[in-house]
Length: 174
Image (cartoon, rainbow, N blue to C red; front, side, top):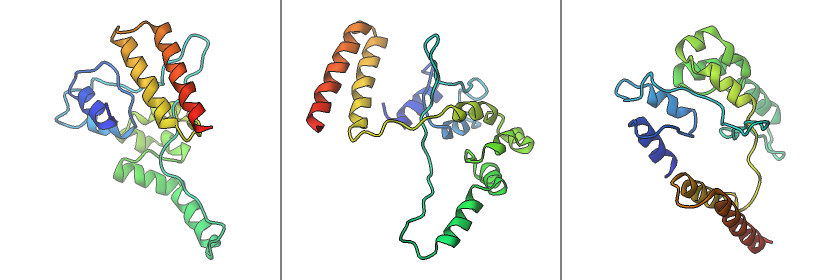
């Protein structure tokens, strides 16, 4: 399933878990949502002794080394990530703030109480591996994980098969 298919399936009450971007929370809490008030946010589970990580994503700011207006670009970047502007984006547009302090703002938390959970999740986020074939690795892993969850294949067999496919694909890129 693609992201929106997952969200709709979960929001209709037909799934126990959902791995999605934070925008889904507002949709799950909308007036006509069957899961309104019945869902929560939690870090991605980890094995005993392991660590939970979420994936970074979202907006990025950059200034070209060739820019003729670097000073103004820096001023704009500082404005965009400022507490006041990030708070405004959160309250008026429902955006997840880039500024960590906004996740503790009482006014923001009164409107978006789930931000207290997102603050923890985002504090442990990591960038995904930089691979030209990341999408293909994800597709292979997803296929085998789903097969294990559907009891169509044993976990050890699935792991070995996925590893072989990923290794074969990696060789093609070298």
